[in-house]
Length: 485
Image (cartoon, rainbow, N blue to C red):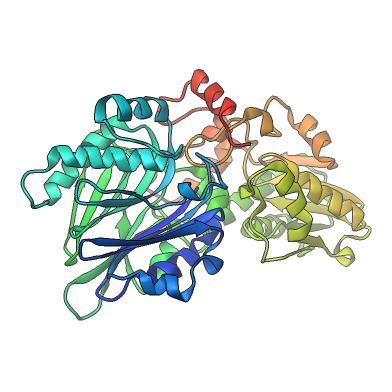
């Protein structure tokens, strides 16, 4: 999970990209980078850490040009602490390309071998983004005819890229002196939204970003989502071209975007994240009513912030008082994307504080968006008891996460997942709660898709069914052996 943005503007891009990355900070905390294009020259600044601390005035002044892209990283491939693996990545031929990527390639072993033995290209890191930019460069080089670059050449290169690359990828690239390229994998697993702004000057201004809130904040009109398998090429003069570059493309977006990853004020694939979370709460309330005696619940509490919409609906539908019992320290990052179990456990009490007046002597129903490793959930149950709760019912707006997520979320090992190989009563004992209730898989799918034209979701971490059809048991075992420490 990362956040990406790219834009072609009639004014300097640096501040616009910076502002967009601030809005996407929730999608990655490990590192950040901005690149701008001035004529045929790229200006790049990338560094470990978060956006607000990463860019000084002198860095921003050096990012010249009206075309730019940016990235916030949450490491799922490579090493979180290696600054070399911060994005964007750069290759100098053809033309010069810088690229940012959100997703996870699942055939990196095969592509790495092809890079050395067939494409004769050198890789300097373990990042799959470096592989992706080199595949793009190689295929674009094969299309070069003379000194000019036309959109058809770009789209032919992306067609070949789709044939070679497996997994999830939403990517944005700048081609020096020519324009901005955005493309999305044939299943549309990771999000990418296209926007336009008319300034009254020369041509339109364009933006592509991971979430629609970036477009709305910048005063852009949301044109549409980049389609699965589609490539969009915007010239430096503001002309936009597009082509569907994969004949078998179909939209199967990641369900975890709606459960947890995206901000609630975003719309992805025509689905409001906030409305989806409200519907998840409605469905969860029905399951709670079925399995929990009503006398055992005095108040409903969310774990802020992403579970709040679901918790409000649970309370309303069950007719139980809604209370905010946990206070969130907003200066601590999201614990799910901390780079290790020890860091996550340490961070929970820094991030949340239980207010004793809301817990003492009460039977508490806690609503969280999901339970992944169980580290945070176990700590929260303990905090509620220490604050004086009589009984603790823990509920998840998502089903049990039983399988690795290989499409861009750091869930590489089955053994890290608290639900893997366990029945719900066993998980309940592990968390230390009195009752544990999960959303049903069918209810989650129905809640997210209700009222939309989207027909299916990638739910692989809940069901073990991998949408690309290329994820094998051997691959999962290899990922576990090579996961981040």
